Length: 351
Image 1 (cartoon, rainbow, N blue to C red):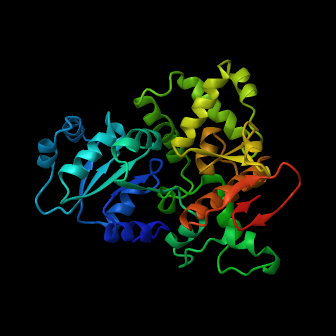
Image 2: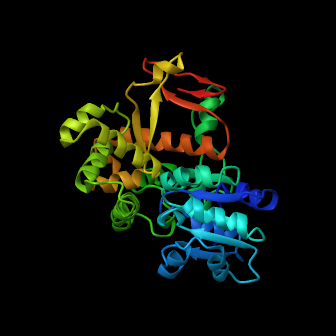
């Protein structure tokens, strides 16, 4: 089955019209390799998970890199490039010294690529982000609906003109009930309600890269911090309170949360202020890109009717749909939560 994603057209357009390296970032298991093999099936795929490939790339030698290629390839994909010591330097060698080959690189953790490539690939790359499925992508891949609309943003912007009820040809309540528990990772389209997969994903997606890159010194504190955040999705985050509960420094809490953000596990929403400076230093709200991963962290896969956090799960689900739609649709909204009981949507702001 040919899976359709919102990002398909943008990636195809890049390969057809742009010369810069294509950098595709996203968490593990969100479908980066799948989408690239669909849009560029004849590309040569070099996985850094392969030790011979990793060793060759670590030499940073154009002659060695050429030995990895075959003459007929026009596109080369370096998969999981963030796992080598200096991914930006490696990508620059491909781009500058092997210009006859189009370069695509993927990474599961944006911080390593963004920090290291910001100088090495300045003016030579365009970054794209792939997230867990949107609701419309899920419905498309399940064969329920054909379009890839953004129903969340459509309803927010035109709420006054929408009918109070809408007829569906499928059981929307049942679909949402499942997605709020198990989430929207692509694997679950064919293997629904697989809590074992999600539990295993917690370690591979959340901690593997961070530990491999020696960016987390205290694994237990990091896991406990992420669990605390999972228990308070949609609530204001008090860094000092978290530090006290975990018996670690506030700066460590802030750094770990930043790493979780850069690993596409969580995202933060700041409060709205009429003055941009007014938003600085105020407590944000934190959400997970995928509620299934969140539920795996707290080891709770009970159905909605049996759990007290149904409202928080729904809020997280809607916010993640808004963030994904805002990016894929290039709407350019600034997303905030109101400090007062206000609900306003303007051309560039969602509150």
